[in-house]
Length: 142
Image 1 (cartoon, one colour):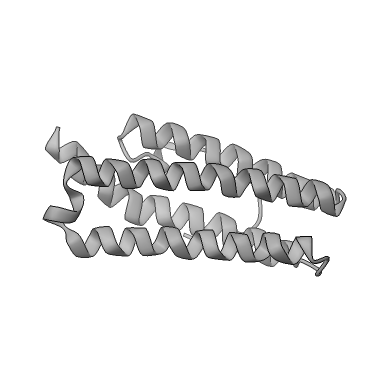
Image 2: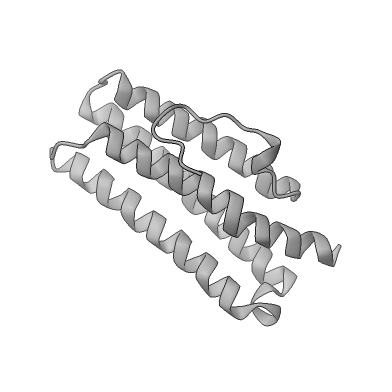
């Protein structure tokens, strides 16, 4: 699903069925929308850097939380390739977001549409694919 750089809205289509993950995804959407609005409104570079820092910080917390659930639920033992792919996706997103933040810190121009096209699409596609598959695994174990 391609969503572009418009503000995201939570819907049941994004639900994984795991309350902890879904709550964190809702928070990620809120932070991402705040960041989107900050850039769209043309706030100064320091405000843009700060909101990206908030996004990266919460994303790191969320990824760590998911990976703890993977460990506790035996995801890697049962589906090692899926777990590795999931973690690789997390690392790739974190690297890309950090690269954008570094560019901001260095005063390099940021293409707003490209940045939020990437962030929004990555989040929606990751949640609707990789995270929902993981949610089904966890729910099947319950």
